[in-house]
Image 1 (tube, rainbow, N blue to C red):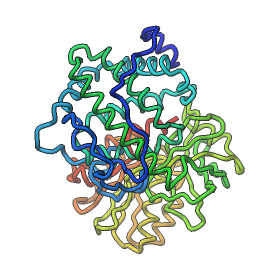
Image 2: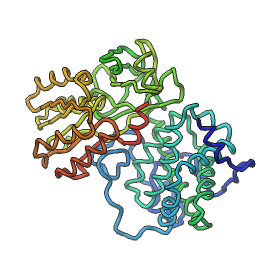
Image 3: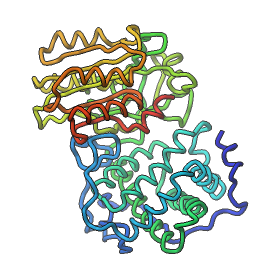
Image 4: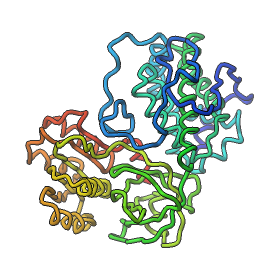
Length: 453
């Protein structure tokens, strides 16, 4: 439990000191999110009128967009220019605390809840996934502080997505105080006045982008959608296909995913991919597998019934079809990871394209190929589609191996969806057979870890 972890490394009894420098401002009308060119210059933020207008936060991003940190095409390398002084200080701190990340995380939340107990209610009782993800996101953002092309899309997605937790602009200084306090405690070799000033500037820039993104998103979309369950199809004892009707239009792209909250576990959100391309009737489908000790997955598979109301966060992810190219599509789907692959197939068909689409559908047993009839039906309807089932207990090794036995794939873009282990092994295998990393798309591995419960 969280409380037990905190007792192992409790913070001082007095609240953490407030850092007057951490003062991200509230959103202003017409101002969009854009980072300063580099946090390391110690310059003042550009005036509102100098900021370029960004796309609405949470809006689907075209495939191949630069700098995805959410599992899409590999981000471009950092600029060849020398990193800024602040970036160097930030990265030195990150290097020092990396081996003790668990201690930093526990102390961060101990400081946050001691100094601001009112924020505790924003986090669920079982908050391991959500807790670790927040600090990890902040540290990831800080690592890329010198690369606005990478940083801005990532932070805009975070800022808009955090609306569903009830996050407001006034919460950001409290988080910044806890961040600085935990780093100052554990980065004993690299911390000092210069490092603290660099982190203050970096966090102020990061939080301002997120605040502005949330304000932009608020103008075009709700913080969450209510969605009524209209069908619950139990395909195997542990896998259900759940279809819901959102209470208002829900824009997304085939291949994306969303966060989902059930009435049985309030404030506990898990990620699930859409199992179809956008439909004329507005319905959304998800494939859910109940896993041991999985609170949300078991609730959805074992307890959800038509009439139940779920909550959906905004869409995310860049594992979408690039309709500007005629490259073939090589798709690897393991287990319920076949859901977004099916959506990609439908998307290609709806666009009238005839590019070759090769699907490898992996499962541990024949029974686990729960959607094979649907895929074979699509193959029968579309001459450009080929579906190959791969059944093996060692799925993370056998599915990539099966792909290597066919090909060549040098003119294909690759899409991988499934358990984190499958994605890691699949990416490595695809690179070995000659597919460049920037042409391999997949969901963020850290999000998939959360979806497993």
